[in-house]
Length: 256
Image (cartoon, rainbow, N blue to C red; front, top):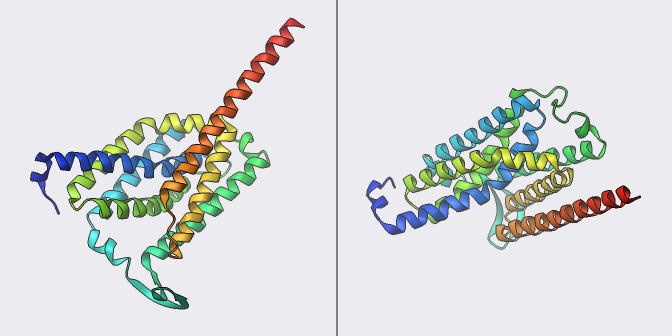
C-alpha cells in the first residue's frame, strides 16, 4: 500500500499523471463552489478564503487516503428500507448519507444564490461582502462541501490505484495547480454574471447527481462534465457575440 520503490517504475508515473488529471477535473466543481461562497466576503479577504478552502480540501483528501479501510466500510449497509431493488432490500450506507447531505446542501445553497442574484442582491454586495457573512461562516460551508467532494474524489482514486503514496502525490500536485489558478477562475466567474449563474446551475446539477447516487442510481460523470463543458463553450460564444455587438453599436453611435 505504501510502496516507495514503485516510483522507479514507468507505470507508476503514468498512474500519477492520470490521477492528477482526474483530481483536477473532479476538483472543478469544488473550485466553483469555493469561488462563489468566498465571494460573500469582502474583496480583500477573498484570496485568503480561497486558499483556506483549498487547503482544507487537501487535508480532507489526505486524511481519507490514510483511512482507506474506514472509507471502504462506509459502503456497508447501516440499515435497510422496505424498498425492493434488483439486489434485494434497499440498504442505506454511510456513503449514501454523506452524498445525500451534500446533495441537499448544494441544491439549497445554489438555489438561494440564484434567487438572490435574480433579485439583484448579489450586485449590491459585490466587492464589499454580504452583510452578516464572516470568514468562519464561509469556512464552515467550505468544510461541509469539501467533505462530500473529497469523499467522492478519493473513492474514485482508490478504484484506480492501490498505492496510497501515488494517490497522495497526485492529490498534492492537483491541489497546487488548483491553488495557482483558483484566483483566475474566481475573478472570471465574478466578472461575468451569466457565467456565475451557469456555475450555480452546474452545482444544482451536481447536487441532483449526488442525490441520485445516494439512491443507488449511478450517473456516468463523463456525461455530466461534457454537459458542463458544452454549456460553457456556448456561453463563451455568446459572450464574444455580445462583445462584438457592443463594439458595432459603439462605432455606429460615434458615426452619428
